[in-house]
View 1 (cartoon, rainbow, N blue to C red):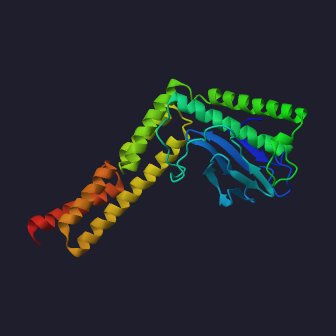
View 2 (cartoon, one colour; view 1 turned 90 degrees about the vertical axis):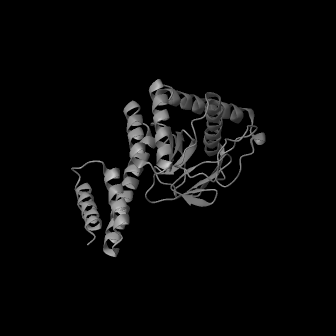
Length: 280
């Protein structure tokens, strides 16, 4: 069974891909299709996930990656196809600009083939650390491979359309998200929050907009606290012009005169200015 934008792996019979390995969790990991590619995520509290020999909690998968769950090693194959374009130096949570329709179609096709290869490997491999040699399969096994690949591809295609990511609302939300992300990257956290909220109003399931709205609020709070601390330090040192600048920045970031921190910054701003004007 499919659940959301993902395939689930583990020992339990209700997983999308069942791994018969006692060292695997019943629900061990999920593969998720996101805007920037195929992601594996550890959902087990007791067991680990390794990708290319490194422990991960969540990571973007490269073509031909090796995944290890328990004692089971899974080799993804993308044979005869151009590799999925991924920048290995880019952090997972920093998305690239929205691809064109043609690029989206090609990328999704590569993902379908990769996941199909994963399913077939688990179905056919007796040696969990061996690489499958499809040239040794007989006709019945080849037919099974074809049917399984077609089934998974059809599931993922249906998943794309049922998720609403081909709708105008999603495309408009993606545009707002990209505006917000540019502001976030440039440190304009207030404007970023506004854009992320607009994206979520258009498409409430936009996970990256949710994530970066939270991060923007956190960064904004950190900026306010840092400016307030700077202002207090400058006041103690008698550097009143610099204190005024820091307190003014706090008020600009908060914007709301009813906010308690805003009131504190305003009071100290007035105090520093009075000291300068009175030359105390």
